[in-house]
Image (cartoon, rainbow, N blue to C red):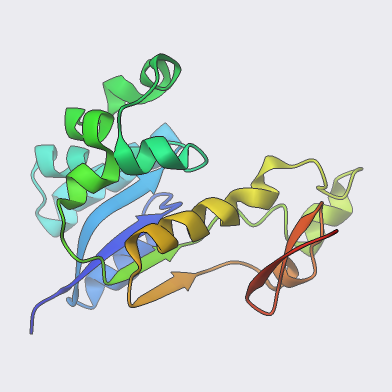
Length: 182
């Protein structure tokens, strides 16, 4: 049986990727994370545990902010984006984005676990503004854009139950759908 092609968004140090890799049924085309220590850890683990070459790990693990979704998907980075991320990524991702890395392969699965602090009951209780001004409230939108772009057969969106009761602004998730206040 051939392996299913996968992408991991909000990859962190690779916890979700690791679980999927252990099944032996997935080929990861890309892992996207925006914190450098996590990227370094994930690249290191892919080399040491999963027999990636150093070059393959650098190409597959992308240090980037998913909120810059168009640049992530298509490349052609702005000068500002290059200053932030170019030295940590393979030139292919800079010029052609995830589309260049994926190279017309079918994406079967997209997994991701965006930061949960903005949605968690504890996070809202500890923040004086109940997380209403936290940028992480809208990271799910980037996840949705990427899923819509690649149209995988399945996606796994891991978060906390509070995501369904959070209503920080004019957009919110309820029963798996995105709603907008009028």
